[in-house]
Image (cartoon, rainbow, N blue to C red):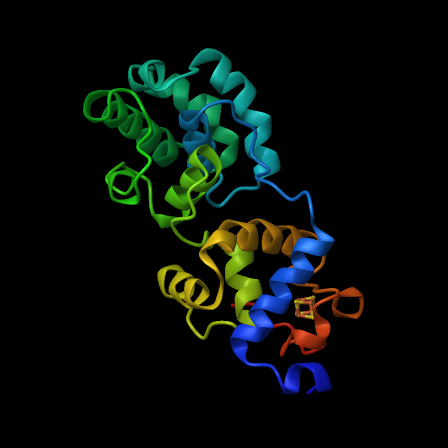
Length: 222
Ligand code: SF4
């Protein structure tokens, strides 16, 4: 155990990690391309089990053909499926996008809700998607977005012992200031993509290594 890490509590470590992530990724932001809250919602639904890069290749044609909740709500489902096919799980994603847009039109005056409880009523929307929409469309830190990178890095950094995203989110919300909940996720995602990759974490080049219990340990793929 390094001298630095030895004397820090879990909360102090989390705050130091947050400070370093802010320093090293000062301009980090949502990597999905969108122009409106509904487009962000759709892009986030498409990003499940898919890279943001791939989603950004699909959405220009998708949003050109169906730019808003009203048009997505009445879209031909097969056409919608074909437009999102390359993001994987396309039948389910197309079905959820259409059902969510129908509910937005009929229940929410065609406006994506800005409350967690209402967002979670939308088909295909769990806390991860809701957190992304609230943070980036409305500037509301309602929770910590836990995607595959946040899950993996929070585990390696020893900030949670849970594997369920909801429990991980609860642990992180206790460790971090609310104003930084989305800052944390976005920057941890950047670090996961650039340095702490799933199969080959670059611990020797990692600026968090002295704070990380998993530094230079064998990789466990869970
Ligand atoms: S030290 Fe290694 S395991 Fe820990 S965060 Fe950095 S790259 Fe990931």
